[in-house]
Image 1 (spheres, rainbow, N blue to C red):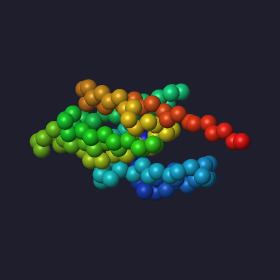
Image 2 (cartoon, rainbow, N blue to C red):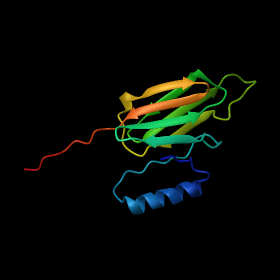
Image 3 (spheres, one colour):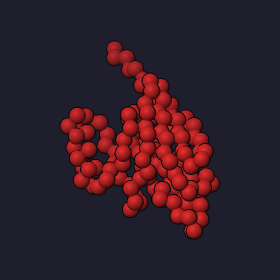
Image 4 (cartoon, rainbow, N blue to C red):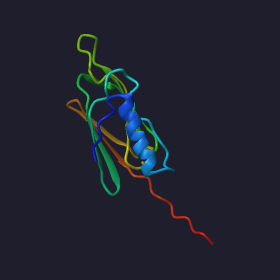
Amino acid sequence: MDRKPAKSIFDELYRLMNHLLQNPYAPIRLAVSVAEKPAPYADIIETPHEIHLTVELPNVSPNKLRIGADRRLLEIKASGSDRTHPSPAEGVHNYELPADIQPKSLKITFHNNILSVIAQKARKEKIKIN
């Protein structure tokens, strides 16, 4: 499953309304980028046990890259290499994930301006009812 970031607030509202109609009790996360520029396109692939996110971040220095995760949200903070070559990917970008993850399980690689994040899905606990 891949998902492009919202182009406008109206696209995001449309997505949220569809989400509410399909899953009325599910938590809602906004996927609007804090930066004024649109978030870089990301491929999000869901497997039975993992979620893979791949995003291109041109002109971003690896030491100026910060990644945070919550249950269903991955946040990427990117800064450019220097002032002479500003990156179109600079800023804070949030990506909504298709399933809950274990934030401490992130495996992150950054090679040739491609960020790859692999996260283990959170295990659902079964509750016994007596």
